[in-house]
Amino acid sequence: MNPTIENSGAPGWINSLMDTLGAPGAGIAVALENLFPPLPSEIILPLAGFASATGRMDLLAALLWTTAGSVVGALALYGVGALLGRERTVAIAARLPLVKVADIERTEAWFTRHGTKAVFFGRMIPIFRSLISVPAGVARMPLPVFLALTALGSALWNAVFVLAGYWLGDNWGAVTGYVDMYSKAVLVAAVGAVVLFVGVRVLRPGPGARRG
Image (cartoon, rainbow, N blue to C red; front, side):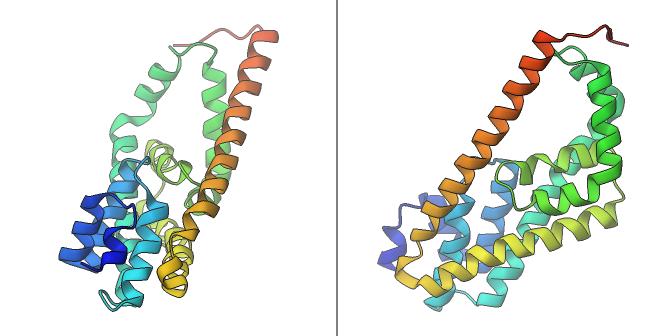
C-alpha cells in the first residue's frame, strides 16, 4: 500500500478495502457510511480520489462505484422506512414527548409537496443524506424516482470530494477540514431547530390532544 495512504489517518479497514478491491472497495465503504453516518465519508471520498491520482484505481470507476455505494446504502434505509410503514411510524412518534399526531401529519404533507427536493438536496447534507431515505420509504415514494434522485444527488456530492482528492494529491487530507466545518454548521442548525421546536411546544402546548 502507498505509504502516504497508510499514514493518512483513515481507519485501517477502509485502506484495506481500497487496497484489496480498488474502486469496488470504495463503493462498499460508502455504502456502509450511508448506513452508519458516523463513518467518515469526508475521508473515504477524497482518499478514493487520491488513490485514482496515484494509479491505484481508475477515476471514472471511483466515481461510479462510490455513487453505486451511496444508492445501495440509501436503498437499504428506504427499505427500513417501507417496512416500518406509516401506522407504526405514527404509533412510535405519538409516544414521544412533545410530539403530536398533528406534527406528523404536517410533516407528511410537507414531504408530499417537497419530497423530491428533499431527497435530492438531502444527499448533500451531512447526516441528513442518510436519514432522508427513511421518510421516503415510509411515504412509499416511487422507487424509480427515489433511485434517480438519490443517484443524481449522490453523484454530485461524491464527485466534488473524489475530484478534490484527485487534484490535491498528497494534500487530499485538507478536504476534511472544510467538510468538518460544514458538518458542524449543519449540526448546530439542526440542534437549534430542535431547541426552537421544544421551546415553542413547552411554552405553547396548544389544545390539540394526541389521536391514536
